Length: 541
Image (tube, rainbow, N blue to C red; front, side, top):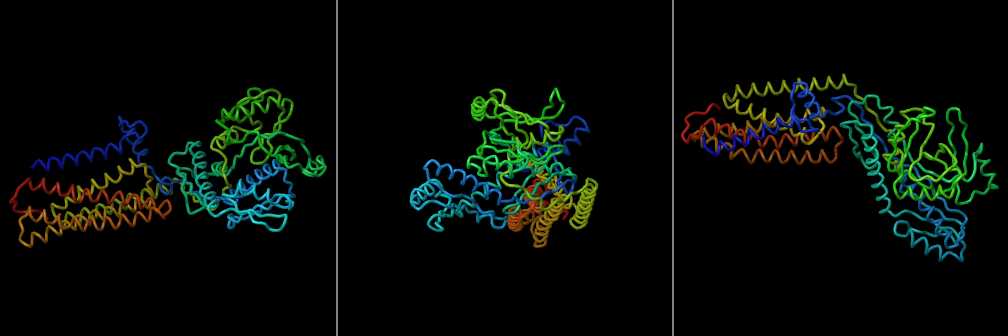
């Protein structure tokens, strides 16, 4: 055996050991198992199964982009009102349109009743403050329209999509759902994969809850109706005020409050939130803690508003309006949550942050554990049947060289499964199909090499020369077929959905393993079999 062959064998042994370690290690502690039970447990942790194999749910949500555009316009409207008030520029009203999902980009702000004598000052304020992202257009002598620039619309869509994915991921991670994922699907949809969850009712409620927390100064109320609240202001609501209801809850009628338009603190100012049980009443509550900057603002506000009321508003509904009895710094509590799950869910939503737009459930597919087990069993059976048939054919047709191909095939499968473990990839049913296809391509590579060797032997070359020529001439063909397939897989991964991506990932990993086993491992076995002989007489092929 030559020194080169020894080095190649050491490389193969090292790769094999690394692959075995990747399958038996504990992915959390990186330790090796000390019992059969730990071995099985580590294996299950390392091979992450998708919903079609493990069972679970796939949820497709449409992000209601029009909500994000409306929120953006509302923010601009409030800023414009403040700027015009500072400059003492009167106006009749500032409103926005109400576009649907398909026309979200057509959001516009309408300004009415600006006196002609103030037109120049108004245009200066509007263009200086908002001209970079909004286009100001005069409608007539006193009215104007502001439309969002296309570049700003793209930014709003992109930010909304990324923020939604980030928020949903935080919610799922907070629930402790292992192996779940959130993926972009198209321009305005997300795919939420929940392996092992076949009844996602509670999870859907959590994901679709906006959880927009705001604390407002109470200026009046409660009132029995919105009309009664307006009458208390002589039918004219100041620009600095708004009316919000509590929403009819069990045993509590809907009540309306007049609140300041600008919140004291919002959900963005939270540092932490957690469910707690009241020691006196036994009821569940949600405690929240503010950030350092927000705590300073809150302490200053509560210190100057003792005996006034503060409304706790969640998703534009007044939960409670307690009286401020003392200066409060950095914490608060939301009471009457009804139970532990409700308090915990609210705490989770508050920590995850509010959604920039509401989510519309477009599709839900659930796979039970039994169906997933059937898929695994059928996939394993088909894979084993395919491998056995291929091995038998190789042994019959290529004799002892078929053992060479079989060993390379086994190492190929080991590398592929270990790579899935190291990369924490999720194995799906299409992924199993990719593995089976990889086995076929691995055999095809060996067939190319073996047939080339046969041709060289028929041409009268010596065994060693025939092996060298066979590998040399087949190498470029193998590389060509594998590169073109990898390019195709890249497009599948870029434009495909979850299952298609799983197929592409396993196939690409398998193709790289193919090149290593067919060219490097198989050649090494031939070298070892020939034992460095320059004049070997026969070769079983």
